[in-house]
Length: 110
Image (cartoon, rainbow, N blue to C red; front, side):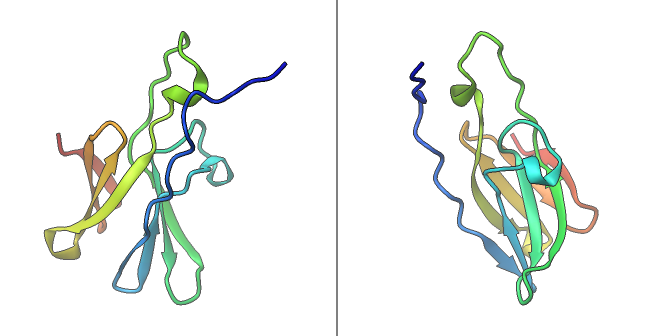
């Protein structure tokens, strides 16, 4: 059988560096222990590359009647807000989330 994806691969998100910490939106979240695709940010020491922490910002609810690749919702942008005390994470559906860097919690901004 020949299966073809219904969508293009998501574009990589530019990492954001704040106070020596690099924030990324990994496309493959399975090595971090998460199921599904997208919705996770990971923090790394920018100097050494050592992993610091990761967080599920949002979870995609999958419709079983849709093809898997079109159900996935990936992060498209990470930006600093609140004077660098938080991140705004935007996904493909134009939903915005605030990640508090002090307590590593995520809340919808929409």
